[in-house]
Image (cartoon, rainbow, N blue to C red; front, top):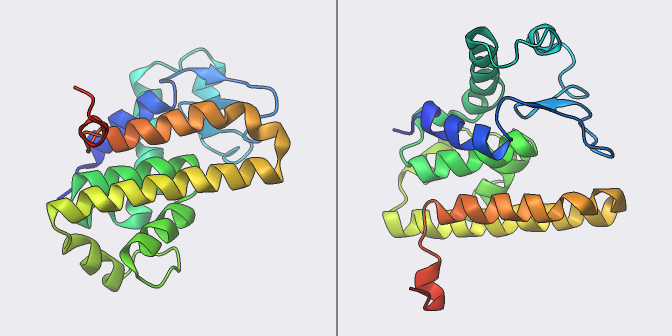
Length: 186
């Protein structure tokens, strides 16, 4: 079964680690370790961040618990057989929303796209072969990129983030698939 800690470590890296970011035009506002203040103003870790204790063990544990509860557990990550699938759903779910990430996963699986991992979606995920897992991760990545392109057409001020978003998506897929083999790169 998939392990949360593995997915968490990768995603924390994608989010820039345990640092406070405030990028002009970011709809999330101030963001610490991927936790956006505008979306999660009640997260108790903000007090530690503003006290200069963002890298403390206590704050790191609060971040980890937040990710596990708000993202991983929501899509039943512990019940997913393939680490690559759980990582992909988690990474995009944390960056967009779990419902969006699961909905895109369901499209890839030909399941009813309701944004909730129920018994049918979970069974379909867990029955995938290794080759089908690669296909799933590739398809999910393309849907992620499409989602981002749609977002910037709706909010032109978000175009400055596209390079970072797409880089994140392509790095996510390359963790599981040697894309160079398809392009003859050695």
